[in-house]
Every structure is written in C-alpha cells, then in structure tokens.
Length: 255
Image 1 (cartoon, helix red, strand yellow):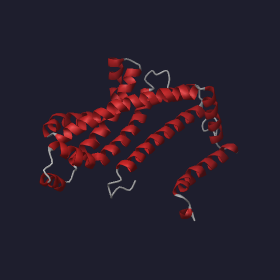
Image 2 (tube, rainbow, N blue to C red):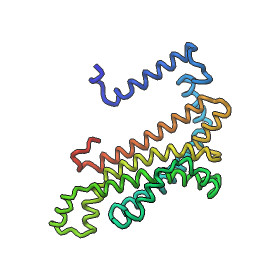
Image 3 (cartoon, rainbow, N blue to C red):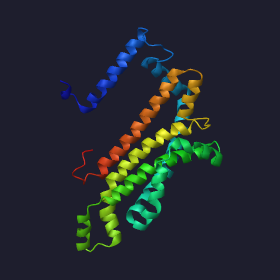
Image 4 (cartoon, one colour):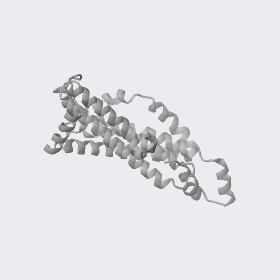
C-alpha cells in the first residue's frame, strides 16, 4: 500500500510518525518539557523568534559567514584540484602537503586562528573556508585523473589541441566529481559554521544555540538545530538540481 504513494510522500511517513509519537509522549507528561520540549512548543518558539525578528538576524549572519567561507575555500579547492590534476609536477609539489594537512583535525587549529586573526568575522570565515577546501580539492583532482584513457586516444585521432582536450573532454568528464565535491563542501561548511560561531561571535544560529544553552532554553536550541538542518537540506537540494541539469548527457546518472 505504501508503494502506491508518491515518493515525496513516502519520505515524510517516518518523520511524521516520530513527531506524532514525540508530541504524544510529551503531552501525557512522559517527557520533561525542560529536557525535551514537544514539537508544538518548538514550533511556537520558532514562530515567536520569527515574529520578533531575532531569527532572521541570526540566520542572515550565519548565511553570510557560510557563503563567504564556502566561496573562498571552495574556489581555491576547485582551482588547485584542477591544477594538480592537469599537471604532474604540480601534483608532486602540492598533493603530499595538502593530503598531510587534510588529516589534521579542524578543531586543533582553532587556537592558531584565534592567535593569528583574533576573535571575529575573519577567523570564522577562514575556518569555514579551510573545512570547505579539502572535499572539493580531493574530488576535483580525482575527477580529472579518472577520465577514461580511451577517450584521450579519440581526441588525438580528432587532433584536439590541449585546450580542446581540457574543455571538451576532461572538464565534462570530471563534472560529476566536482559537483559531488560541492555537495560535500557545503555540508562541511555548515558543520564548521557551528564551531566558528562559538569563537566569540555575537550573532548567528550557532551563537543563538549557545546563548539558549546558557539560559536552559531547550526549545530555542531545537529551533537552531532545525534551522541548520533545513538550510543544509535546501543547499544540498539546489546542488542536486544543478546536477540534474548539467549531467543530462551522462546516461549512467540517476539523479
């Protein structure tokens, strides 16, 4: 019977069942309203924050930070990934050091960022950029190097120049990996945003969650978590929409 429902409706069955159970247990007093407020209370608090304008102020600050950090780190990851993928010498010079830096835990560099750039917008954006850099770099590099060698032979028969090979063969073939890297980088950007906004920020969804925790406003904490989930899902859906448009030519693509 469930298989007869539309796909988008099937995806909502489990979340709605969890919400109904959650609301029921909270209404009968099984769950503590301080530790785990009901979905109705969380929704009411979200509406309250939206009406008094606080939610939009914090959301705007978070979106600006995440966008700036992703734009900086993602563009550098894409550029360096292309350079290292196209050029063997660049790979030998850059890739070993970048792979070593990639294994360094992101939280361990926070004290250095605070010492170098202070507690402010710059250090927060750079932390997000650092987290966004590596997924896009690794996937771009892998995409360039995974082009079928037989296709190179075809371009040689057709007498393609190096520039034609790059734009007509390598970049289109690497596009699925690049788009995957963008999706992963966006996810990491939102994860790093929470950490960045705990570094002395005075606005943002992460700051709102931290402030709510101090005053035991659990409903506000859940509102912040929900905002992160919703915006993260929206950004991921936009990239998937971009994939469906740009990868129509790829028969194996099932977007």
